[in-house]
Length: 290
Image 1 (cartoon, rainbow, N blue to C red):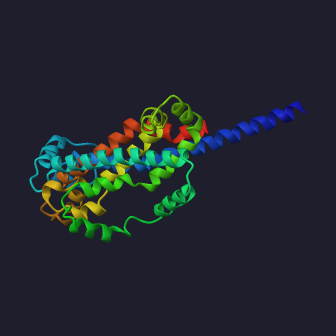
Image 2: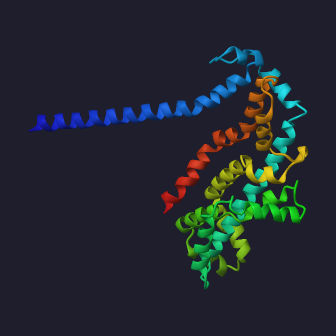
């Protein structure tokens, strides 16, 4: 009987080992598949136009800094200006989105008022509406208010972010008890002081995650900026990348094109590489504390 049990245990351990091996192999394959395009982008950014036309290569070449100078100093597509514009819009958007979404979630979570349920359901209903539905009316209003070639229409609407609000509300329910708010009120703390000094530090992981996601989404946003920005000094990186599609590639330096695309996505890569642990922590913290 003992030997039979030992055989079953060995079989179970073998099956577990095989299943883990299969999972790891699949994950490694998917990782390589996802990163291969970024690797090839970097490789192509190190090659000259003649080397790119010569064929496929897996190893980097020696034309990286030459492509960087050509792309950075291109007068037709001003990379420094595009990076600056995209950073201003993305940074302010992420700050406003995270703060006001957390503030809205705090109001609905803490205050017991008539219509609270309706407000919550209404915000969720707005979350289901694609932003493209109201794009025409929004652009018309911006033209009537003479807000074209202005960053305000791209930044201020971020105050209303139903998806971020829903995430903040769910996270707040798992980590913020009403006893903390009541204790702060008993000590004479004002509502905004309680929110800024007590609630925000508790919500720090969730706020950090949503700021990162909002930054990336705003950085990659093309639809609305393309409708509102037409001056060269106001264009963002996605608009400049779209301009490459109209270029004559038979006369264009492809090494410079790949370098420009690399520079355009470099801030997003840096965000994910250096803040990936913060993203995982923020996503899992609510579940661990709930």
